Length: 120
Image (cartoon, rainbow, N blue to C red; front, side, top):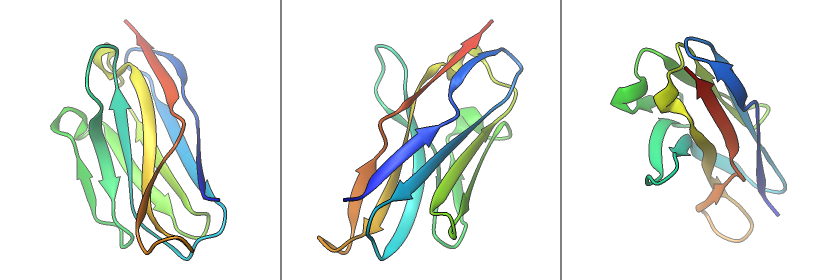
């Protein structure tokens, strides 16, 4: 069974930094695109950043220049470096990954979420 496990969330002051990690475990053949989403209270889940298997990236306008997504394919892990954090970045952050498993060639998996709280 494939799992995505996130870590690195927490409480930080405005202007500070956090680094989120998300590691995939289990039996699978390949990980395609990986991404980070977030959901603030009362709001819909939104894309923060995504990265393809060859390293192409995409960012929400609200985080461009402040957040950086990266991945280590050898460790099956995706990272989100968050700098210059703002109170508006407060949310539960979820990672996802499109994975080729024994069940299907492409399945979308989600992590359990990690809370990021930015105090002003």
